[in-house]
Each structure stands twice: as structure tokens, then as C-alpha cells.
Length: 91
Length: 39
Image (cartoon, rainbow over the protein chains, first blue to last red):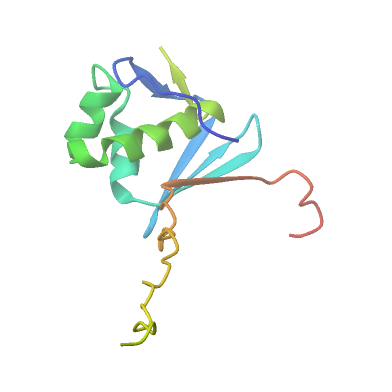
């Protein structure tokens, strides 16, 4: 499934039914509602996901996690995938 | 004088460069539905 666009200026949170398990490669997310697993293959993406709820928007969470401007499109695409699979929800 | 001319060497056609590295996806997702009995 191709990810749709992701609004970096919006506030996003992890879905309450999602559990996060840090791994050496990044993290595993498990959604107890959809029974889907997502592999986050960069530790910075884990930091972004963890920081979403406290950041004013997703762009700020990326910046706080050390994601530079050149990498932002890749991270936005990754967040779009997570939003499409209901791991994240806009709030 | 002859009509023969030195053969011209055509430049080898170059195929458009294919991307050598696929985009490295930061997220992969899978469903565990249908895995009953695997574990």
C-alpha cells in the first residue's frame, strides 16, 4: 500500500492500542486492534514516534530526534505509512 | 584516391542507469493474521 501524504504540521500521537518495543535495529510496533506489526528500521524513527505526543507537530518531533532537512521526506513517508496502518492518529 | 573511408566507431549505446540501490524504507509492516499454528 502506497502511503498517502503526511501532514508534518499536524499533531500526531501513537494509537492507544499500540505497544512499542525498542530493538537494536529501531523498534517493533504492535497494534492490538488490527493485529499488525510494524518494523521501524531506524532508531531515530523510534525517537520521532515517542516524541510525537509532546511535540507541537510532527516536524518538531523529527527535528528533536535529530532528523535533518535532507532526511525529512523519508521520515515523512515512514510516518505516512504508520498513519495509514493506524499506528498513528492525528489529534 | 579511394572511396574507402575509415570505419567510424559508433559510441556504444549506454543504457539509462538503473538505480543501484532501492529506496531504503524506514518502515515495514506485516499482519500476523493467519499465523495461527506457527507458534
